[in-house]
View (cartoon, one colour):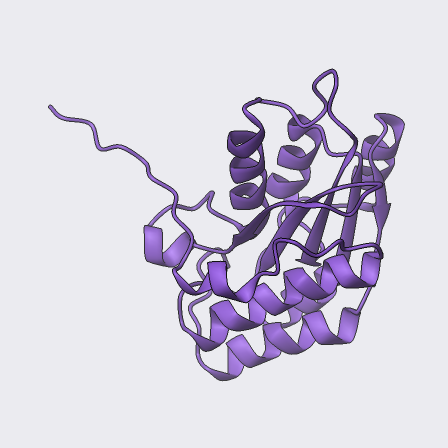
Length: 189
């Protein structure tokens, strides 16, 4: 039996949509990029309503981006956050963004991460998660976010991962609502 390979490739429009040379100095700029990716992913019908990006924490240098590819790639783990983390690790040639000699990294998300993506952020070695829309916004349109509790964030904080919530929340929630209005599939509800 020949086992299929898993290949992760972002939609072609992503390269032109992202300003790779910009320094994303603020949380608002970082989350705005993630929300913009989510919005384009919905409008171009290339995946779900979530976007994410990995940045060097202090310089604001963009390392990698991700969009939700669950449905088009038939892969339940291809959330925007996991895609961004995998591509960041690949770009830097490491299994952890906390490797010796690397700067601290932020994960910016268009919406608060689901349970899987919170775990992936911890294991990938990010030091901050900065999120737009709230878990409640995703639940309101029908997405199941899994077992994420206030204690989940306490657990992360105890391990050196800070969390910032509600940056451009309404803009992130608007993308979720647009996806629902368009009849996008709820693939984990």
